[in-house]
Length: 444
Image (cartoon, rainbow, N blue to C red; front, side, top):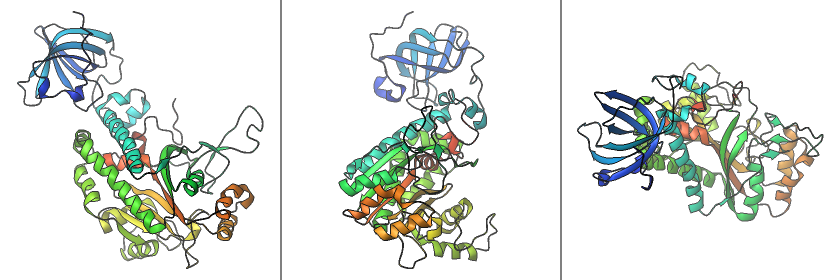
């Protein structure tokens, strides 16, 4: 029987007890289908929620997992305690067939295998849940800054400047020789461009893709990822820390309030105690520890780390997680790192050894935010550029911001994938982005 398409489609996520006794029109993909004694039981999912809805038809339908269908029927109370209601099918149309070659016919696939079929993995419970949480977190980013009257600025993906000074940039090669008139790269940060607008509009943020040619194969690195980077005129490091803490708390609260069903799934399948861990973020102020204090804590712990701890050396993920998980038991902000470890644009402290910077560390992940007060003194900024082996003339436009109406200003960058990884409890960052790009990984 043909489906009555005059009915308005209802999303599975919108179905509640108020629909009982009403005729509904649903469209989606079959998760399971079994027929017995002239009755067919179908689990339908349309992507709007982690939950399926059971369809019961008095006809046999030889359909396989993955097929897309449209159904019309009446919602009734379910006799099963596992589900509050089910749909008694009155008509069903097959939209798109699926056969036994569909890779997701069986359950229990590993995450490694699913990365090999990234085009199909969104149809699994795990990656559907990741996508929904990621979508809501992206909206929460804009909510947070727009409510504070920050302006959203779209900074370029193509740049001629190395923001970090580390040389881990993807160079663009074009068929047209000298297309840009100089070397051009995929950006590793929108910060420098963002500062131009912060020193005009006051408070801005960027949210876009960034790229780093870092030959890393760890579970928390990607070659292509998304960054949220606010820049604020007249902010010192302390105000920067306060904003970063409020931002992380906002993302976590939004997830707990509005992504509860998906978080329940992650807690059941991937991390027991996930919601409790997230609640700690809201309940406690972030601890603040200087880099020097952190080194002392690590040395006094007598713990054997893979990488030795020494003042002047960068902290590794194992050190960051030890401080966040064991010492603090929650988020912590480390600040005032040695200037030899940080980029040229960070403001020099009076001690001559450190810069006014911060890293926000969280359990399971380590660093989730990196930021600083920016150097607003023209002479010191020129010195910093030279000390990193860079040519000040290449940053003349950036130096103009200090020549004309310079002000104290600060900013930070939050790795969006790391934030979603922290919120979902997923172990590998390659499972947080739709199509992961990393060293040795760019399948299509």
